[in-house]
Image (cartoon, rainbow, N blue to C red):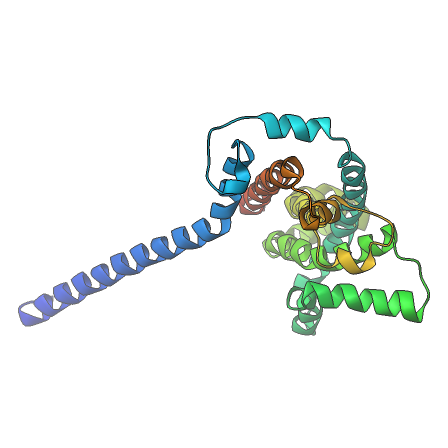
Length: 281
């Protein structure tokens, strides 16, 4: 039994560790709040200015909905929105299929996992303009392919797939392969094991992969600039309007506020899906 000076030293050491833990927790919270403010502060400010009478002044108020009424009375952005939705849906489907296929295999591999994972995640560290320019040079100049919808789908998929794969791996790494072994012992075939066991438990990862693909494609700009051809997506349209000489307040402030709201909601849904543990896992 600890007595005397040893007990006093242990008590002081415990108090010091508790103080350091409190300091570290508070510092982490402060840094997290600062990062959150830097990320979402401009988004919130843009939304506030979108309902201000004079947003170009940079100060909020008096508040009005006239810019949103002007946005919905202007039909020019509807066609680019349709193109963006079509491309985003195709990218989403590709991300769901490929992320599910790769994400199921990687955790079960014995060798080469690190090399393959690094190759799949490489687009995250390559600048977007570099990828867009590379695709343009290789397919347009060397192979003579026409730029348009298919090239946008390709560059959007290259950008979105790493995020989709990460979301899938978060779920697939929690998957217990012993469930498949038990099902095989009970006589279940490969298709039955996949449909009845893997699909329900990996559904959150597959859905998250599709949502990442859709969201990142819907808001993609730097890679699209080089390969869009005659196909104009919504980000390309708003970028062109923002760089024109006219001040298109409804299109710049209101439209981007709506896009930001959709992006935040979908991001929150992705995080909630990845954080939820399915029953039976």
